[in-house]
Image 1 (cartoon, rainbow, N blue to C red):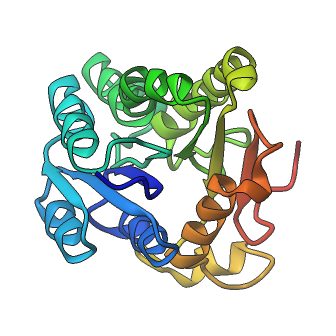
Image 2 (cartoon, rainbow, N blue to C red; image 1 turned 180 degrees about the vertical axis):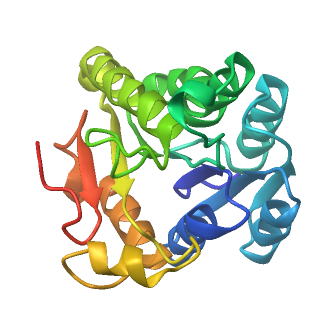
Length: 234
């Protein structure tokens, strides 16, 4: 059984989640990936890790990945909670069912894995949890209503978690991407960004890797915008 550092990435089959998994493997971590598409399981095999084809909306699937990871590598040092895409519509046209879907996609996607994996980190007296949020969590846009609402809630959850487990050396932070190249590109959106370009998934992955590192060991409960200057308010 190896004692290498181990990173678990949910929704890691493509886009930012896949870039994060690749970056951790590049940095010498063993990786475990959960993805509903099967791409995450294939990527994990390619990276010498373990993968499960399943959903971050299923406690059973998250537990399966956790058990597989512990059986193979013996520990979990980093948890990265990524997400898919929730419902989008004018705010008064979003149904109850769609709001509940948004809750599952954008908030429970963090709460479920954290509830299962954080106690393991507490027991080993160390760990880092990084959640992929959105640049619009505090400056909401009507383009992404369910994302903005529930990721504002994620910011509150993160602060409460950080307060509770900082003394156990278990940290939680959020990365808030703006327009990233995993999304369809438009000239209008590019022009909104002071840096005049989309960010890359690799830039998000590098930020996540920093927040997982010893160099970020005194950072917890924070929301770090990575958006080319698109949103700048506190």
